[in-house]
Length: 376
Image (tube, rainbow, N blue to C red; front, side, top):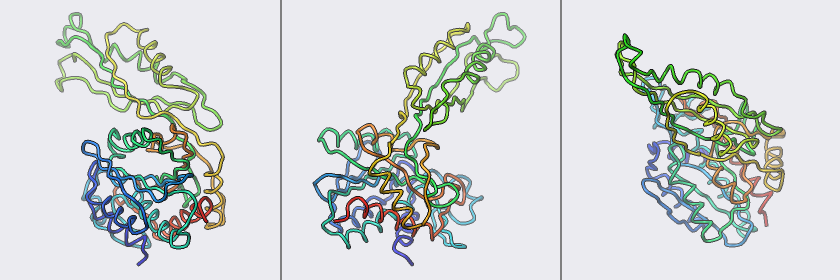
């Protein structure tokens, strides 16, 4: 059994449903300390975080990941137990195999080989891990970055192990992400009997024209790096469950995934302007999950492209699709950030899995990136 596969199996069998860590970070820090890393435990509220660093000189290269996983979902739909790592037909099954304990295992084995060959490497290497990426992400990487910024500890290059690959390993790397702006809209009405609508006020009816306008609005046209900003309603809740009662309020959850052509304030202002066109009372609560970021071509992207080509003999494509990642907290510090990890086909699904050969190849690519940037 390979070192990478063996470590991944151990991590999968630690049931770290967000924000739990279940001992994963302790296991990783013990491996890193043998390589000369110094580990800090930067925990906030119920979230565990580690910052492990080897070296004090710039430039600083950082692997970024999360040890928490999403819940397994319906257990009866899993072919094998979600927290029992099972090898079958060349794949390893288990929750977190692809998102993203597989990448973490590949981080560690790549580092072990690289440091054995280059104990006096240039600059410094760090690993940042959190147990709150799959949750609300308020006490994880964002807090660790605040600590680093306060003591002027700057990350030059950051490689996030999110599952970026599409059809084959490393066919895509993420060089940026769209922003995410969430909102909870409460439309106020007057509850009453459906037979007497003249003395009630139906919030669903009141909001319907505004909803149509919001969903048809063109927020921007995107650009060469990002698709157009999208608006999506994710939840619409109203009513008491009775068929003869006009509801007293409606609650609507919606989200903007926005490009660099838009910004938080403009989207808020345009939303309020649309809502205010219609005659209803409302309240709205906003939450910015993250701003868009883009890493321009530079040392990190070049090193990653070269590493992928040297290991796989094919070229990769830069992309900014998908959801958000913790890279959104690193990019504003001035760091170059890219995401490179396993194929994302089974992430968050039942029977999540990773190809075992891909796991080994990913570790080799990570090692090649380190070689390209920090080899002595």
